[in-house]
Length: 139
Image 1: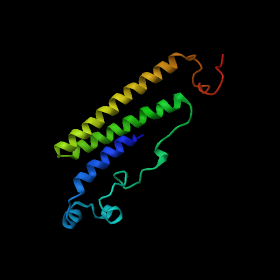
Image 2: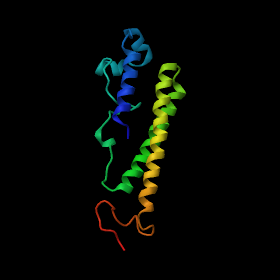
Image 3: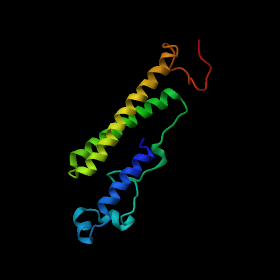
Image 4: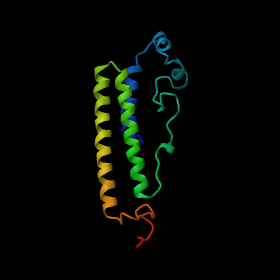
């Protein structure tokens, strides 16, 4: 799950990198299809052009399930930032992406700690058999 703050930071970077492009630079860079639809406005989408949607914000209401979803989302975001760093040569952009990447690592660690604390407080033989935020504890 991308946090909205991350989208805003990435959007600001894209805006700064594209605000003064000439039409020739837009065409040469392959940015022309995006430009036709959005000029240099921020329209969050994947590298494949898939628009951001609230469906990315997954929640089941079960803390075990939701923490696993959060762990996976943090790792996916970290991988995306790693991939951006492989292609990027702008030092200012790299610094911002490195900052966001480090946040993903820390978030992953905190979600892992939360999952460990939650499961430690449950009956370890039965903690996948019920939703601890909804069902009565099974005995």
